[in-house]
Length: 316
Image (tube, rainbow, N blue to C red):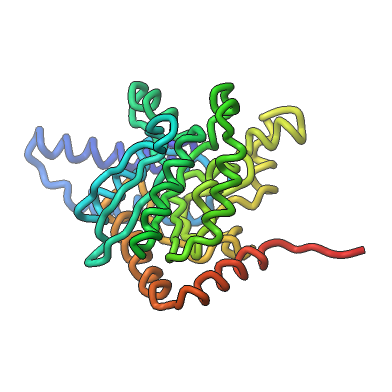
């Protein structure tokens, strides 16, 4: 799948493919021509991805070939043991969680998981958790706290599921309860926004000591389409909404919401899962090394200070 703004990139990729096919069929040397085109392609990718509009960033963050939580778990961690259920209603597969090792350190992982095809998306509800998903997440975080192990959260959701059953079982209460309980967990908690982090659905596992964002991920109180529908009564204004929401990693770093931007391969994480995982692994290890050295008292004090410092207000 190619995005609209990648049209020129696709044209050069097609030229390279045709040259290589011609060389194979006729046995001719086209290495010089291919080398020139590959250099041109690399320059064009860098120029394009360095100048994305906020709405184009949204498109990249939602790319269906982008690596999801389980893809990063497979590439970054070892000894993965998945745990299931909230011990109250059922197992919500929109949130995965369990024990794993990051290097030699034992950690608890909690992350939102989308599907690759329609069958899996129905099973995982397109990465939109129900209340039991957030209750499962909190159960696992408390288990990590019991054993004194850090928690790593992977954020990637269009939002919590707003259906009737979800409302009946208390989706708002489940998210609010997580916000309170995560704010006082007595172990290091680290979050990485790997795709789209939308609304309270993202925040339900996002109250952490550090928030990392992949270069082309987004994090916002509402989707651009939802914002446009509310403010301008039409989703056609989604580009204007995306700009106003300040949802890119660079915007959120400047606002103090995000603590670090993790670089992606040129062309986005979907073009090279291994390189994307390497960058994220390095960032996770570096930040956990700092957090695990803090005393419990200092850890909690810094967490509270982080969220108290977000935003501006004025008394009149």
